[in-house]
Amino acid sequence: MRRIGIVGAGQAGLVLGIGLRQLGYDVTVFAERAAEDVRGGRLVSNQCVFQPALQRERELGIDFWAAPPIGEVDFAAAGEGVAPAIAWRAALDRPAQSVDQRVKVADWMAEFDRLGGDTWIGRVTPADLDEHAREVDLLIVAAGRGPQFDALFPRDDDRSPYREPQRAIGILYVAGTLDAVPGLTFGMAPAGEFFLLPVLSVHGPVHGIGFFGHPGGPTDVWDGVTDVDQHYETARELLRTHYPWQAALLDNAHPAAPTELLHGRITPVVRHPVGTLPSGAKVLAMGDTAVTNDPVGGQGANMAARAARAYQDAIVERADRPFDEEFMHAAFARYWQHARHATRFTNDLLAPPPDHVLATLDTAQRVPEVAHRFAHLFENPADYEGWLGDPEAAMAYLQSKGPRSGAQTVPRAGTEPAAK
Ligand SMILES: Cc1cc2nc3c(=O)[nH]c(=O)nc-3n(C[C@H](O)[C@H](O)[C@H](O)COP(=O)(O)OP(=O)(O)OC[C@H]3O[C@@H](n4cnc5c(N)ncnc54)[C@H](O)[C@@H]3O)c2cc1C
Image (tube, rainbow, N blue to C red; front, side, top):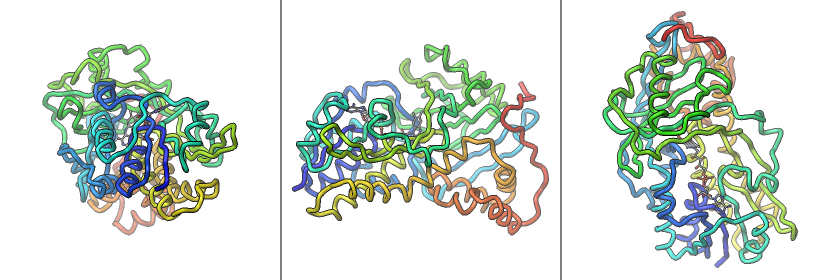
């Protein structure tokens, strides 16, 4: 059987590795850390995974966890006072789920092992790749976002509108009692966004709360925050100041554990997916190594599952023919059919919301169909392009839903909140 090497035991690499092992391929995964080190490690993501990606996990029989269902989206946008200017809820047709990636990766590494996969533990450097490429028919790099393999897979300027991080990110896992919907709570303010969702973590059920602040703005506050209690108090202050309708959200909660915080900034980037090693051998990028989006759109883990499916199908269809450069471009193009939608949706979310988006969010308050459609963009970003990606189409759609209320006055990015 053909030999496939995958650098990176993450959301993308392991789903591909397990899928190929189930078909009898000879698969080696190069994992930076052993499963139990991953499980005991630091927080890595908030990983809200929607139905299409969950379906892939079900198909492979690797949906091992009974995580709390994320059954609805509770959206609100800040107004001039304490009450939000816009607020609506919409049920998801099929619930999403967030299982801590430390739990997923550790359990999937064990499953890959059980299936007879070969795991090599250690950090692969770019200089190691030639040797590994010689041992397999196809070498895939699924090692997450940069910078270690950035030179191998240069930025695709045509597909990458941003050169700098667009959000300062702070995530905290909290335990305790929260007065929130059993789903995804999404708050929008001029300074940035916040999301809250139930997570099945290494500590059992918790909530993950993430703030996504405009760099240099009033919610870009995490640089000096060093411990979890400081993060918790800062998060409460951000809620009181920028999302006052949720001021008490964390009052009866507490940090889940001293390690459960994460700060960072991510530059969204699409890379040229085929790298050339010093020997001339070609390697194929996958997951965040190929396409990194800001996590504000909640797409990366979902895209990883799509990438695993697209690459697996391409590998199987290739049969005994060589995994050459043409194959690699075709495999990525197959993935890009989905990834381009998730990327466009996420990149547009990073920009100040234009009038037709605000009008849509406003109309969603009184037209459940509009709220339902917006909520489902997270699981189906392909709906974005012909809808909110096209201002005329978006306004025509709203007109077909009846007259506007005219009530929406949402402060835009750069304006200070009036309420404290
Ligand atoms: C704060 C935050 C919140 C997020 N929230 C969401 C969300 O709600 N929904 C969503 O869909 N996505 C979310 N994401 C994105 C999601 O976590 C990633 O897009 C996804 O994990 C990418 O999968 P991957 O397999 O490409 O990379 P990773 O999951 O990063 O896996 C890469 C693996 O490669 C290993 N590795 C790295 N370097 C080497 C090396 N040199 N040698 C060997 N192994 C190596 C790493 O240890 C890791 O195990 C979020 C991300 C962040 C940071």
